[in-house]
Image 1 (cartoon, rainbow, N blue to C red):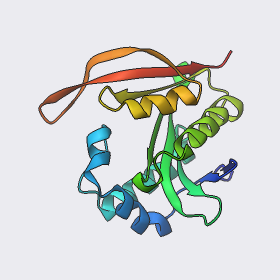
Image 2: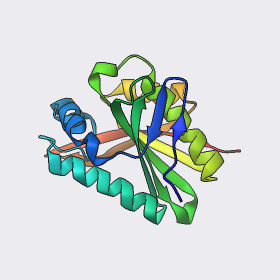
Image 3: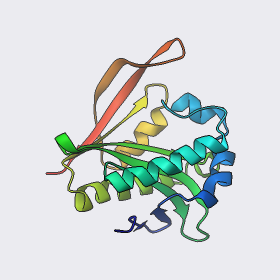
Amino acid sequence: MDFPKIETERLILNQPHDSDIESIVKILNNKIYSENTLNMPFPYTTESAKFWINLSENGFKNQNHYIFAIRLKEDNQIIGGIDLNIDKAFNKAELGYWMDINFWNNAYTTEAVKAIIDFGFETLHLKRIFATHFDFNPASGKVMQKAGMTMEGILKANSKKGDKYQNHVLYAIVKD
């Protein structure tokens, strides 16, 4: 079975490859990604990018984690990443994403999120897809809303980064 390829109006979502490593490191070596995500390291190294690509390969092989590169259709340039981390026992997945800061505010992230939600429901036959964002990052919540997700609540002190507890805003969409 081949890794899925998802096409939208402006984007291609497909498997990240070793040839993307240099671009990924260049994009993610900015503290803003570490500050706004739970698991993004800073500094972001070549080893970090290789780990992410390996995670994509293993997740696909085990069919429990679908990690896609987000690329511009016009030149195949990687501009982000998006994933569904599958919980098979409950037929649901957690959605995560990042986008090159140079491409923020162009609705690329929303376009990719809508496509991955469709993939989750139509191809993987999931019942529920959910995502969270730190409460100080409302822009991420706007992406989720525009993609059709509904805010379900705030998870108080849901995680800890360094010595600071983080509140997460929970969004979800359910397939009827």
